Length: 122
Image 1 (cartoon, rainbow, N blue to C red):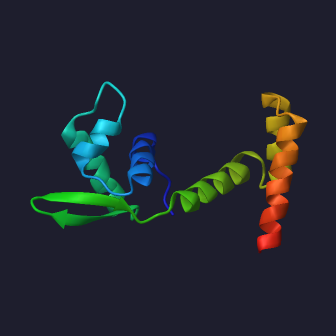
Image 2 (cartoon, rainbow, N blue to C red; image 1 turned 90 degrees about the vertical axis):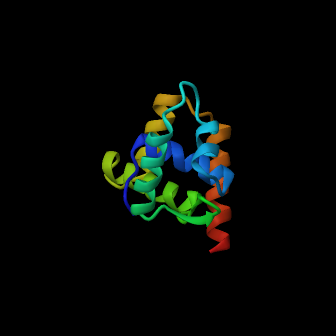
C-alpha cells in the first residue's frame, strides 16, 4: 500500500467519515481557507490512481468512496512508524511514548487489556 501525503490523507479522512461524496462535499468539510475546487479534484484523482478511491457516476458528476479501509491504512502506517523509528519494536515505541508523553499507568493498563482481548479473538 502506498503512503499518502498530508493533503491526500486529509481528503481520505473526510471520505472515511462521509463514506461517499463529491468534490464539493469534500471541500465543505475542509477547514478555512478552503482550497480551490481544481486542487481537491486533482488530489482525488491521485487517490484514485493510487487505488485508495473509486467513484460512481451520478448524472454529470462523480461520487467518490474509499476502497481502502481506514483501519487497514492505520495498521500499515503504525507498522511503518514502528519499523522506521523503533527498529520494529512495539515495546520500544510504547516505552518512548510513556517517557515523552506521560502516559498514565491506567492508560497503559487499558492498552494492555485491549491487546489481550484482541489476542483472545484471534
